[in-house]
Image (cartoon, rainbow, N blue to C red; front, side, top):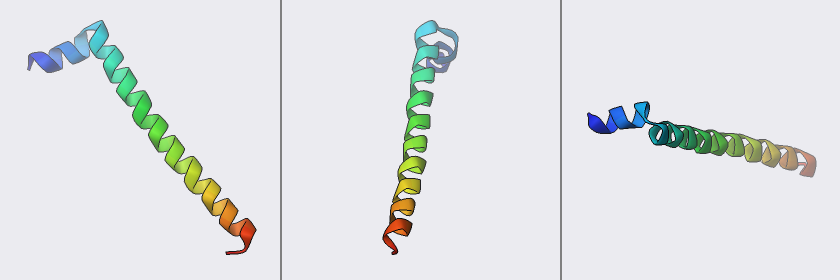
Length: 47
């Protein structure tokens, strides 16, 4: 329980949560971006 308390109440814990959230969000954005670009490329190639 102390681990969760430290994670959400200390400055270094909150920065860790922010960093992890940012990285996960960036991963989702890149996945959607590349998926959209691959679909556009396939449509432009006539596949």
